[in-house]
Amino acid sequence: MGDILSKYDVLGAFGMTVYLAFFSAIGSLLLGTVVGIMRLSPVRVLRLLGTGYVNIFRNTPLTLLVVLSVLGLTYILGLNLDPSSITGNASRWAIVMLSIYHASFVCEALRSGVNTIPAGQAEAARAIGLTFGQSMREVLLPQAFRGAIAPLGSTLIALIKNTTVAAVVGVAEAANLMAVIIENETGGLVVFLVFAIGFVILTLPLGLAFTSLSRRLAVKR
Amino acid sequence: MSSNVLFDAPGPRARRRHAILSVLGAALVVGLVYLVVRKLGDAGQLEVEQWKPFVVDRSVWRDYLLPGLLGTFKAAVLSIALAGVFGLLLGVGRLSGIAPIRWASSVVVEFFRAVPVLIMMIASYGLYSRSGVFSPETAPLAGVVTGLTLYNGSVIAELVRSGVHSLPKGQSEAGLSVGLTPAQTLRSIQLPQALTAMLPALIGQFVVILKDSALGYAITYLELLNWSKTLGSAFANVLQAYLVAAVLFIIVNYLLTVLASRVQRRLSRRGRANVVAVGAVVGAVPEASTLGGQGVVNTDGTQGGP
Image (cartoon, rainbow over all chains, first blue to last red; front, side, top):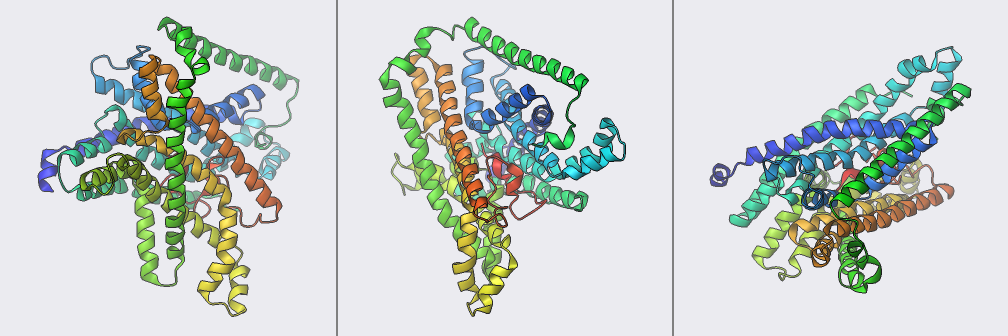
C-alpha cells in the first residue's frame, strides 16, 4: 500500500479535486444566485427563463455536459479555454460545466430559503411602515438566507462528489487516478477504500458544519 | 407563488420597470441563441446532412438511440429494484431495537452516501473484470448497477427512516397498545404508511439514477451517452448526436418529475399531508427531501447526482 502511495500522487489528485470543487462552487454560487433572482422576480419573462434554465440543466446528466464540452465544444466548435495544454482545457471546461449544472441546484436552494418565510413576515414588515428596500434588508433576506443554508450545504457536498465526473475527459483528479491505479496494481479493494475515505474526509466535516450552522441560525417559528 | 411574499402588487411605475426587464430578458435570450447559431454556422454544424439522419434515417434510432435508451433504462430499472431492497433492509436496520445492527447500518449508509458514485463504479468494475465473476460483456452493466445500488440504496434507507420518523407518534403507540410487538408495529403499521408517503421521493430518485447511469460511459457501459458517441462518429455529427441525447434525457426526466409531483399531490389529497414531508418530490424541490428533517444537510447532497 505504501508502495502505491509513493508511486502515485494521490494527494495531488485530491488537490485537483479540491481545485475543481473550489472554483465550481464559486461559479455555481454566482450563476445560481442570478438564476435564483430571475426565478423569484415579479417579472414573468425572467421567471420563465429561470424555470427553463433549471429544468434543462437539472435534467441533463452532468457526464453528458462534460463530455459535450470537450468532444463537442472544444474539438468541433474550437472553443478552447487553454490552448497551451489539453488537460488545462479539460479541467477549465469541467469547472464551467460543474458551475452551470450546479447553478440550477443553487437556484433551487435559494428559492427554498425564500419559501420558508411565512407571508405574514412580509405583511408585518410593510404594515409597520418599512419600505420595500428596508423590509428586504431587515426582515426577508436574513430569514431567506438562513433557510437556504442547509440545502446550499447539500449542494456543495454534491458538487465535491461530482467533480469526479471530470475524470471522463481525462482531468487528473481522484477518480481518474483511482482508475489508473486499479488498472495497473492489485488490491483494488484497498485502493477503493483509500479514495473513498478521502472523499469522506472532504465531505463529512462539511456536512456536520453546515448542519450545525443551519441549526444555530435557524429562525425559530 | 413565492413572489407574493417578496413583492407587492405592481403599481404603474413598477409595471413600466417590469416591461423593460421583460424586454431585456427576451433580448438576452435572443442574443444567446443568435450567438450559438452563429457559432454553429461558422463551424459548419448547421448543414442539413448532419441533422437529416435524425429524421429520415431509421437506423439512427433503431441501431443507436433506442439501444442507448434501452441500456440506460436497463441499468436504471435494475438499480432502483436492487436499491429498493438494499435500502429497505438498511432503513429497517437503522430503526432496529438492537443497537449493534443500528450502528452497523448507520455506518454503511453514511459511508456510501459520502462516496462518489463514479468511484464505486470504477472500483466494482475493476473488481469484476479482474475476478471474472461476470463475463466481459456484462461486467460494465454489473459495475454500473453496483455503484448505483450502493449509493441510492443508502439514500432510500434514509427515506425509509425519516418516513417512519415523520409519522405521528400515535401510530406506533396505538400499535403497541393493542399488543403488537415493536417489530410487528413497524412492519404492519409504520412501514406501509411510510412507504406510500415515500413514493414521490422514490420516483425522484429514479430521475437521479437515470442521470447517474450516464456515468457508465466511464466504464464502457453502452448506455445512451455512449451510443450517441458511436452515432456521432458513424454519421460525422458528434455535436448533433450529443444534443439529441441531451434532449432525450431532459424529456424523460422532466416527465418523471411531473409524474412525481402528480403522485405527491394525489397522496396529499388523500389526507396523508402529515406524512408527506418525506415524500416531497426530490427532483422538483430539493430541500423538501431533507432526509432526517428540518435543517439537516444531506451528506450526499441527495439531488445533486450527475
